[in-house]
Image 1 (spheres, one colour):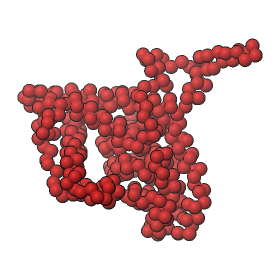
Image 2 (cartoon, rainbow, N blue to C red):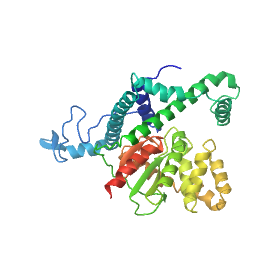
Image 3 (cartoon, rainbow, N blue to C red):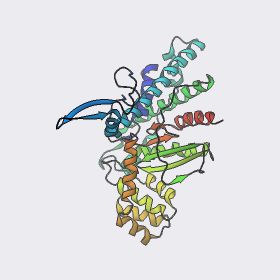
Image 4 (cartoon, one colour):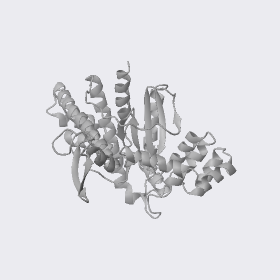
Length: 362
């Protein structure tokens, strides 16, 4: 097995966090909201005049507030990505120091030797059962051509499972090191005001509110659902989850699936329907959506009328517009008391933000 240097492990984990989502577009991680992209200049007040021009001899002015309002969603996205990059950069830098210290403590020659001992040497060869399971799921989900054989794709499945296991081992190691070191970060969090409107679970008035923007056809959103459920269970009574819709343009079935979930909400079955959709992402056509409603015991006639009328489409569009205003360009996107978190990240990343928020409220 090839050697996996510490810096590459940390870079890979950060990269996974940034890419573990369905994205509408890619954007550079730079910002012009609190500081300019060039050199950290302070943001001018909203009424600062940034341009003048003349119309029929009369001088016209453009203020900084008008400009940022015009740029709106793209600017919010840049700010969100900048904050995420700074946060992940800090975590990677601290982890690098903790791994170096742990290697020295154990008498190892360098940090790469620790990575080899704790990650590479502990990752077993995927079993035939695991390989077959992935193959059957990919075939059944239509991700592989029907004539492809297991032997043809087995090397890629082994590579995928091995890399996944490496990431899990690395995450466990880093979590343990941070816990032992009693890591505390004091990086100021940029908070984004997001309306907590929509289907919700958890008590009103909970100290933590998570607003999620999601897409029922996005595989990363389905994966993130497990992390969200773990968080709700771990912080029962302390977290309120609000679900908002952000169907992406290249997911053809996602908008109607979003409408269908709201039709299910009319019959107090939103979360049951929500789970059904994420468990059946290959079955999201209108006929499938109606069948899911029947399977869950909804009033079929009432559900079908709601779905066919398209009367929930405006609610979905409202969610999308609100998401764009706060910089959402991909799914899943979370705002934990206004702190942005993007992608299908492990539950530990939610817990890190939540624990910090709860400490502030004591």
